[in-house]
Length: 304
Image 1: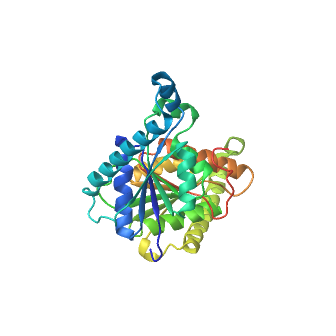
Image 2 (image 1 turned 90 degrees about the vertical axis):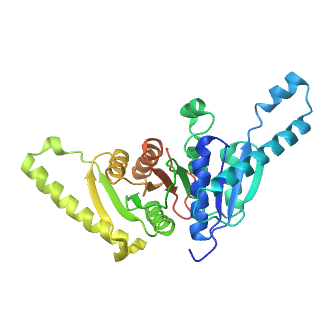
C-alpha cells in the first residue's frame, strides 16, 4: 500500500486474541503499516470489588492498568516471534470503558484503516445473547473489521468475497485486493428464487439460465470496475440460495482463509438482507472474516 494504513489490534489478552495479534503483525509487516494494540478494561465489575473490599477506586484502576499494560506488551513480544516480517514497534494502549465503543472511538480518532480482533472473548456465554464485541464494532464503526479465527501461518492465499453489487460490497472487494494482493479470489453472488413452484420445470430452467448468464456478466463487469485485473484470475460463482449460507459454503469449498463482505446492501429490503448475511458470515464462517462498510455509509444496515 502506498499510503500509511494504521492497524488497530483489539486484544482482550485471551488465547483467541493471540491469533488476532499475530495476524495484525503479519499484515502490518508486509504492508509497512503502523500498528497500535489496545486493551479495554470494563469498569462495571470493578465497583463491586471496591465496595466489597473497601479499596480506593483510583488505586485499583492504576493497578489494573499497569497489569494490563505488562500483559499486553508480553503478548506482543511473544506473537512477534511467530511472524516472518515484524512491523515497527507497536504502540500500546490500555483504556477503561465498554470495549466495542472504546475500540471504535480510538480507531476513528487515529484514522485506522483496519481493526483486528479475535473471534471469541472471555465472555462467550454473555456474548451469545447480546452480540459479540466484534459484531458491535461492525455495527457501530466505519472502519473495516477483521475477525481473526485461523492460526496465521502464512499470508492470505485464498479469499472469498461476497458481492451483491452494492457500494459496500464494492468497498469490500477493493479492501480485499489491497490487503491480500497476491491471493486467489473467488467472487460469490447468491440469489434467491421465489417462483419455481408456480411454473413448469423447462420454463424455470430457461429463466434460471438466462438470469445466471446475466449475473455472471454483471459480476465480471463489477469486478473490473472495482479494480480486479487479469493477474488476479478470479473464480466467479453465481449460486441459487440464501446468500449467507451460499457464501460460507463457497468459502469452505474453496478452502478460503479469508471471507470478505460488505455490511450494508443497496436500499430497502436489500440492506436488511445484507445485514443478516454479514451477521451469518461472521458467526458461521470457518475462515477469518473482514467486514467493510461503504465510504460515507451511515451506521444502520448491519443486522437490522
